[in-house]
Image (cartoon, rainbow, N blue to C red):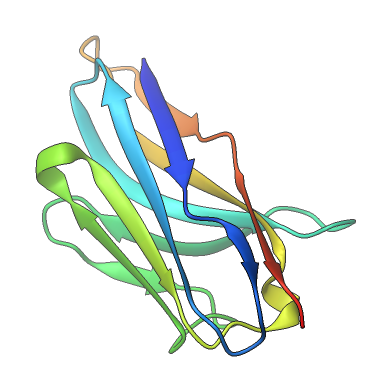
Length: 121
């Protein structure tokens, strides 16, 4: 099983920056991708960004491209989301997601508990 611990959320003014962290631990065979999703009040959860393990290929939703940067440290299975030039519409609970395989080769799809990001003056 995979456990995810997120941190870094908070209140920031428009134009400000925050850095989210997600640390994966537990027993698993591999982690293939680490990503971030978000869910704003009254809206469905949406994908924000994903990075592949090893190669570090990153992809972003159009709404955050050029402002957010996802990175990871494979050695300790940690992913980061650097968020710059934040806008009020970025306000949401941000969730970390990890996809990979267990030692029994079952697919893993784990979620963190979420961290709240509020962008407001």
